[in-house]
Length: 347
Image (tube, rainbow, N blue to C red):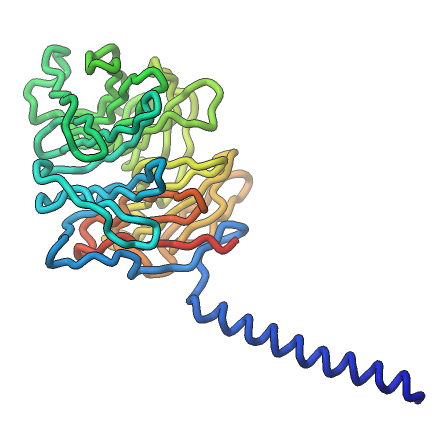
């Protein structure tokens, strides 16, 4: 062996050890971040201590829904009337809190109207929907539409969610009431309705969430049919266009960012117990690509197989907020009054 060959081999061997040390160190740092959850190319690490709030000063009850505004702030809605809305930065530091008037605070939607953002809050106890400023000033209240003859009494109207059209049209999902989707103009005047209770596919059972799907070219609505484990796509006039079956998943509202659809799964009915929730993520073709805390999605002959909780991360996840960096914030219902968890995207 020549001196040149010997030196080259030593260099490669020593460099390999050094690189191996770097790779080992990098792997150790990666492990320090904790386990990775999810499947395929959509995976996350978990931070269940994201919120820096004091429970004594800023308590929560059920953490129902979350949205992000143009400034990057995260708004959390809770039915704790000491502070119905908590406003965070993405690091979990509290910036502001307000709201004492929403004992049934449930649905939270943010909408940009000519450059100004507004919130829409549904209250399942007061049977009302509110449009507010980001500071909490109530600008409009929508009562039970008794004149429509759809409701015998105001208590039958139990709205769970809203979605707002580009022209200010308001679609309300009466998910805990008579199961109608109610279409209002921007002034809060009822224009149309569809859905309601019934056995056909055009009817709904626990119409918990609603969204004007930004991925669709036809301006169609995604509506939750939670008891039947699916999302249903409707035209704005109420024509049923498609059903996205999600066996094993009692899904809450649909949330879309980019080409992906995210949803909290309150529980899995196939597990026949409470506390069996997870988060599901669908691609642009509405195929499940990842479950956070849930089983790996499996399709056989094009049919999604029943999903279930695989990792005990969540108890009853109720909503998913997706920030600009594709990280997730998960609010939970009836889960020991825990603050939201953050899931940081790693792939």
